[in-house]
Image 1 (cartoon, helix red, strand yellow):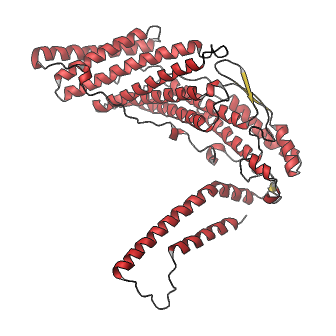
Image 2 (tube, helix red, strand yellow; image 1 turned 120 degrees about the horizontal axis):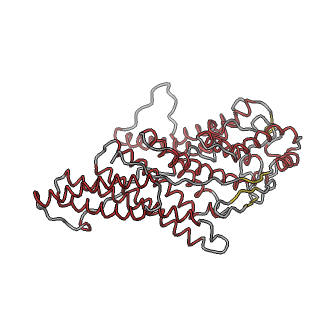
Image 3 (cartoon, rainbow, N blue to C red; image 1 turned 135 degrees about the vertical axis):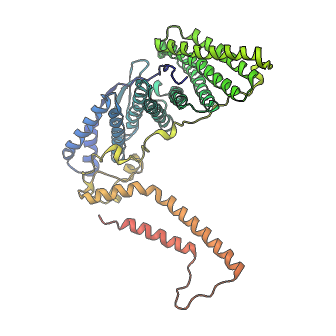
Length: 479
């Protein structure tokens, strides 16, 4: 089966971008809240606009994925300085085209821009995953990675952004995309496992998991169709839904046939010749169903089905003949045998390359506004509503132009959220050490202090002193 022609994969279209006129809003906010000349930021705003143009006209290659990630991170930096979220002071209209209807959808929320970029990142990964022919081990790995990254982007979009922006980013559609991408990643893994000639039982489990994923995909398509059956969205999926559903249903039967083929091979290894016959018979039945559903599919699909029919048909005829004339074992009913259990070897949530709330410098590049004026005025002089609008992030455009200050603030903002957790962890370790020390003293008695040695301090006191020194050290970072 390692030589079977590859099945086609489904990929998603990119959303098309409209206007995002952030220049005047940023300048107005800088002038009003910092009292600075907004023209000083013309160069930075021009760089951000150029980056956006690159992102909305992204090339269909891996470099395109890097551009989208970089722009996504820069939007986070911008929002941390200028409150551009829904109903915020600097919010401006942002327009993107909804995929299914082709209508322009506008929201005054910078998170809408981030959500559309994140959707396009998942869609671009799906394109790149479907583009490879997967004839080599490296090609299978690359496609598997792209599909898994696509699932990761859609998962983050589903879990961290509103679903009301547009229908193509609704909860149902994103669930559909996630399961479809994970199912296709699992297919790549299945292809590689057969290429590696792994044990038949493991191959059968992987194939069954692809079956589980694709069954879920069909369910989500049905839910999406039910949700979109109204006068405004009746034509959203249209022919695409029918084409995808036919391909997915065909794959369900096809991979079920492959799973039962390998379960039959496992039964053969275990010398269970009656079970071997029933598994091969079931594989043949399911493959015939796949062939019926494959009408109108590309020639590559027909080649794969013919190849698989030669393999399964030959296995079944040989097994039945051997059992009829040599082994004479009873052929059990299929439903009396142990069903194949799927194994989840892929996850979508861990596939997103970085935490978008703390963009990684190698991914996003240097902050475009990092050379601007930072903290010229005391942070306490800024109005409280600014912090609320900016999401509580105390990073502004105004301040010193010192590169060391910029570096220091970047470092501190990156580690600040982890300090409290680290302190708790260290305190827990010290408390545990103190408890063990107390038990030891109760068992062997308190050791006399050595002459000239300082009196012992409690672990909690040490932890408190350590915490104060850390905070003090953070405040005294040389800038």
